[in-house]
Length: 477
Length: 97
View 1 (tube, rainbow over the protein chains, first blue to last red):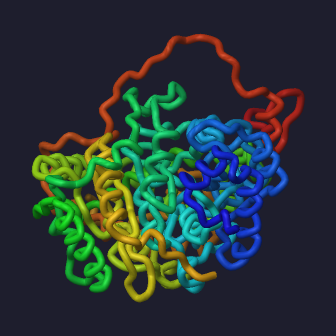
View 2 (cartoon, rainbow over the protein chains, first blue to last red):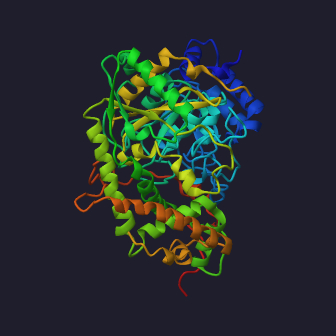
View 3 (cartoon, each protein chain N blue to C red):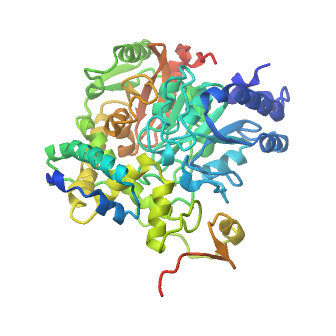
């Protein structure tokens, strides 16, 4: 029996009733990984013995009892490496659990391995990884998206029942769209960031990759909640996200922002999204046109704010307390040599850009101005949500591109995140769900919700998923 | 936003960031960042004179906790990741003579 194809909820129920053991499920998954990961390269690190030992010790109750979950290589899991796909963290072993990881453990999950990513979550293709590029399971010549490309590819290829990722400008939703799985970015403050290696602290958020919307709701409920270890996590009750799924979309107002249906976007992608919108209408939802007039400025705002925050956050990688050290003539030389040898190109480029945006004489012109335009983008959403309950857009303007296609042109790569970035700037929530294929590659549908209204976002996604079968499509590997 | 595109000095900024770059990286980054900075000047199209900046999307201020001693990660486990350590300390190149 191919247990690895089950969803989290299906597997959890089988483990609860004693029909299968966590060991059997974990072994089935490890076998699947051994069979296909040579092609997909979703994982950076696995330890079969450790995973099976966790499975044997797994409790029988708990929301995720006995279910293996993969973790993006940017979240600390005690006793496992955490490299952020960077040479600068080679050899680092996490001495503690991230809060989201601890909550998974407490719910009974097995922490099966570490998934590949763009170095320090900086990228849209998982090509910026010291471990090599992860491949899109639908077409191995193409990228899986990024930065959480390993998590997305692993779930899509049945190499993971579910995975965690992080989303700073689309790093969960974009790879989920390109690989054909569900990817949820919660509202900023919903999930504790404690133990997540920081990229851009005002934008980063942890979220799940799953095979269907029900699993996303289940995992969100597990990892959410206030945490004294993260002062930006919000003290707010965690609703029953799974129970909220069944409420339907009758009377729901779906906003379509005209700025997201632009000339030049892939016609087949647009057609898939338009078909999905008609599906909701047939289920009783109402479609209204809205405007998010500052959309065109989001990429510029993001690449100033995110790089500025990154340049400060990555100052900690100096060869003193952990990771690589390259000795120089004195301490300053040691810092420079260590960071020069340890960071890859994209990370260096962003540190330079962010340092420049924050440097004397340029702060007001770049960083402060970007923060002001961020306010305008937030207000766009506030105004739009007066007219609708959720906003629907394509997750990406095009399907997965070829490996190497954009790696030589950073600006071109940055523009591939154009539809996901605004959600992070506004601090609200969004999910990407599969809505068909274009050029034989998955297309993602993005559903954006108000701050802390994941219930409505998930319910909208679930209603669509119940009426269609796209989420059941799997790549042949 | 400054229009003095010729003055972007990668070497100076790299020094501020304590990041040693090769000559090839300097040349490449200089051209690429010039291109990105030209792109972000589109923010100049907007009048933001009466707009407050957003530093954080969620308005939480002054989150405080009691100043109480609590257990933390054991010292050996922290030092186990250090490139160089001795006698419960991180070893660093000499900073002052």
